[in-house]
Amino acid sequence: MSKYSAELKIAACEDYFSGNLSHKEICYKYGIHYNEKTSVSMLNKWIARYRVQGRDAFLKAKGNSYYTSQQKMLIVKDYLDGNGSFIEIAAKHGVASDNTVREWVLLYNANRELKDYNPKREVYMAEARRKTTIEERKEIVEYCLSHDRDYKGTASLYDVSYSQVYSWVRKYDAAGDHGLSDKRGRHKTDDEVDELERLRRENKRLKRQLEENDMLVQLLKKVKEFEGM
Image 1 (tube, rainbow, N blue to C red):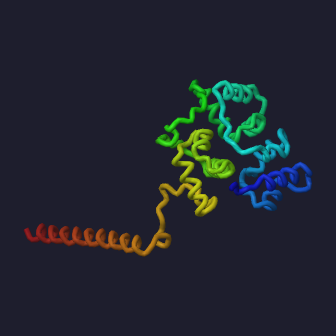
Image 2: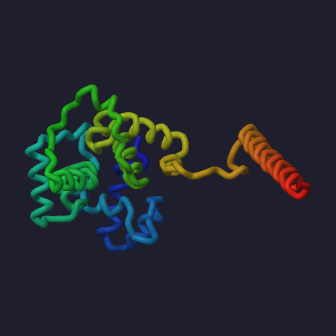
């Protein structure tokens, strides 16, 4: 199930519109991740949806939202005509993510075709993996969990691969938000690895040290030979 229930989202939005609490206070009250630097949180998106659809924004029947190329074009045009931000346009048209609207706009501006959703087997086999931010991964996982773990529909909607969605959900199940952090390229310290890995690293360091010592001995021999000539 979703990390944030429909009831929590509704309560948070109603607190906001009541004016009794600030954005930051509401996030702390309900345990919503709040970015101190940008003052942005998931609450921004919930507020936009609540403003357009009220409680129904979070109480609609579960199911996938599929869009034809014509529907996508109308949504893109609505944004390009200056009728709202990505968040506001997504809320207005019932699109699950403002990032999806952003992707459609980018495709349109790049003169690429906005295709109909086509639920073929290829979504399972997709190898293209676009880069995502941790906030995007959180949103994708939340959508997938709130739609009965529909990995295939989520992958198509967010333009990522089936395996990416499946992997992120598994990591979220195991470690929560922390499991969605991208740790590629980060070298773990000796304290963060198990005993076997520490022994392997120590063995590698010793081998390198012995090789360096052997090179030094050979160099000294060459120097003595040169001096004795």
